[in-house]
Image (cartoon, rainbow, N blue to C red; front, side, top):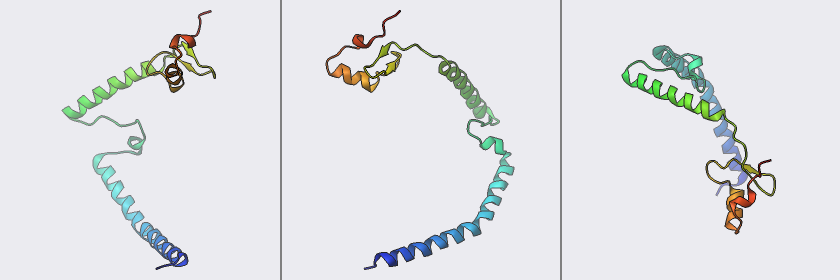
Length: 122
């Protein structure tokens, strides 16, 4: 059975081997990536999140249109701020949209009603 020192020594050797392999294969891997980028016409801008461009052809056109429609809808929804309708005992707020937050669900489960936490209009 190996002891801790032997295992740590093996780990050091394996890490050195991994570093050597990585450094040898790095340039080759970069060249492969560049060749594929050139073959497909991919630019660095295409690799950035949210910057994908539409592909040519019927399927690609449909996907691009559907994606664009979703983006427009999402942009409209995310920009709206809704006033809070409920306030918890520790200052938590909830607009009344979507699932009830944990703090409210816990209070309701303990016998309180949602209306007990409604924010009164001034």
